[in-house]
Length: 173
Image (spheres, rainbow, N blue to C red):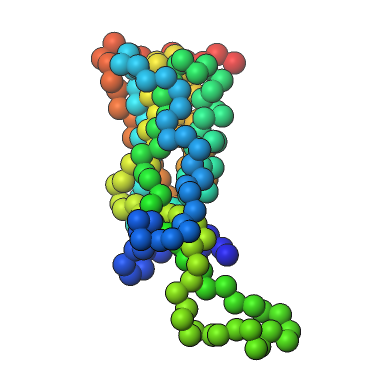
């Protein structure tokens, strides 16, 4: 199974509600850090494509972002995975070895077994949100870049100033 096979949005989606034996999402936590109202900046990772993101790609993006921003301390950021993987991906597994011709059914009853989950995103959909203080502005930018490299699409980061008196402090080397 390759992730590129499940990237395009084709046809009607297959929801988890009707799937017996559908796997659980691999996203361990949808929120990390501490939610507080006094953050200065909010970063939003926004999709520039219309496609499906598999649940292991979402988890990889979350882990990459939280590793970068965890250096400032658990009390100084709030990371949220906004998209939820609820679409069931199916695969009709075929045996491709020699002498397996009597075991295969071909396209007969080719519904497929559940193998994973995905989230459909459109152009302009928010995938991740990160809130930080002004002194951790650079770490927030690094975290969003690290998360964007794990996703199968082009993204851009929107920076929202939550408080007017916030100014990013330059980091000296």
